[in-house]
Image (cartoon, rainbow over the protein chains, first blue to last red):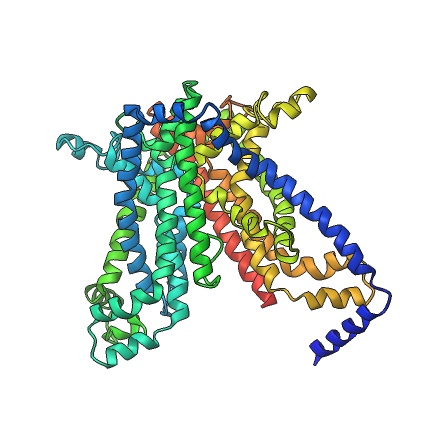
Length: 294
Length: 287
């Protein structure tokens, strides 16, 4: 009723010569768009273009030369290794958590959801510090670990733990809303028809959540490969040994080897671009059902 | 059909028995979830809590309030707040432009807002430090006026603005999309000025989303390390921020010092989480 009233009054308003708001809106819109773009240029676009400019300003040769450096290659291997373990672990956890919490109502559910989100609220440096307090020399398990000659801190295991910590919530966060939207009817129908839980999971649930799951895995991977703070605290940053690609970028920059820093940075920037493109494709595919924000 | 209900709970038993029963009959998905959470999250948090308790309240307070520590809080929190507020203003403007206007390359610009989420922070720090340095593309525009950006607090602020911008845009954008244009148009046609329409009609329902976005951006900026450690000169009492102080304490094997400052940051981020939940509950009154 009210909608109709407002609608009709608007139509008449458009017909009258008093259509000042429209012309004013056009003028205002140009100014607003211009301000937004200038701000974005200063904060995002110019810095982003600079990465590619610095990496390739002297042609591809310095870039290719840096790619063949052993320290650089070991950093790439380290980053791939970290993601190769942290991403599957977090995916299994995220799926289990989503399965346990979606479409359920019980006391403490909201609290559990907030707990799963906690790693996003904790500063990466604090996350690294916590791992040091557990496995470091003076940590809880420090003595036991050194007695048994197991190296966790300043080595791959702690770097992996730090990486998994900071990228933990993504899969659960993206899959829970999808599961809630799908509801439980299809799964219940499958059960009634005699399907085992495993069959139901692979034939009903996985096809339903696949885009949400891929989206979560994509974000987990981007964070895992790009993490700096938490990894840098626990890695010891030994060049050629415990250095991931983001650590290599910082180290090279600090040593005034800007060229090497940008060669590595451009690889990470490409990872970011690929992530954004795939993210956009997944969002289109699901018709904007996936959450835009993290 | 909830899992909790599926577990045939023995009624009339002691709470401990009920707890024990639900623990034994827990589905395996729950076991993996709790096992992973316990190992990855609870254990590290517990290690930090016991470490800070072992320090003792008097010593804790002494370490937490040394002049250097106090100056890092000031630099971290004030700079983060200013950066988040600036992002608040421009983020709302960007969300508005993306929702209400059509212009060339709009989809590309919309997608690019997530760049700070996807770009590793070390790369952000590296390129911001280059672009905003005295002979960089943007820094050289300000250098003639005697304004140094990179390797000062201003540069730290720029890095924080970069990091927290998507939080504001992505929180405000969906709310703006849901708002009906008719309400503003009604205000217009009833003779409200554009200023009145903005303050009285548009802003009130958007306000909780803006606050949430600014709070999310603020807490992200407070914890940020990768980009700020590169663009800051890390000079104590000037542009040294709290996360970098934690890092330096750890490098000196001063675990107690690192833990105390880490606790201050952890408590602040938990308070921010509470505040954000509160704002969101408050914002629901418009639903």
